[in-house]
Length: 173
Image (cartoon, rainbow, N blue to C red; front, side, top):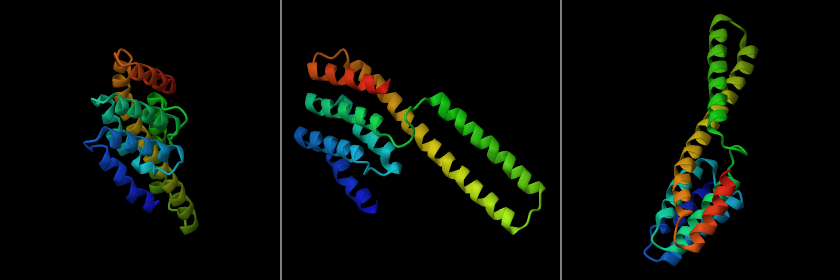
């Protein structure tokens, strides 16, 4: 994971290259990392933010690759099969309420060390689940914001923009 994280900086830097060919290859590389499940979960949002900035690039091939990355990010996201914001927020609220209830009951009861250990494991699991939900919500927000740009590309004069935008909209819904 550390090697992937370190190497991920190269295509992210190349997204700002002068050559459109290099930008296209960088976007394709990010897409391949997503498809291979080699992209660390904590980097999904940064890849989405930086890669999808290229949806508004002046070069049609770069926009096409950015649209393909949009579809790949949706298809291969590690969070949930469907990124429905309302459901994710409901799950977060349930976890927050159960965490608050568990904290209150732990304060009231003075259980022995073994019970405290199991409660600690449950609290750690809830904390990890809550962190995952926060990452999923942040990723969903980035993708929702970029969906508006994808929708604008449906009315582009460039055929490849329209075709890839249609594919991206299909993956988004």
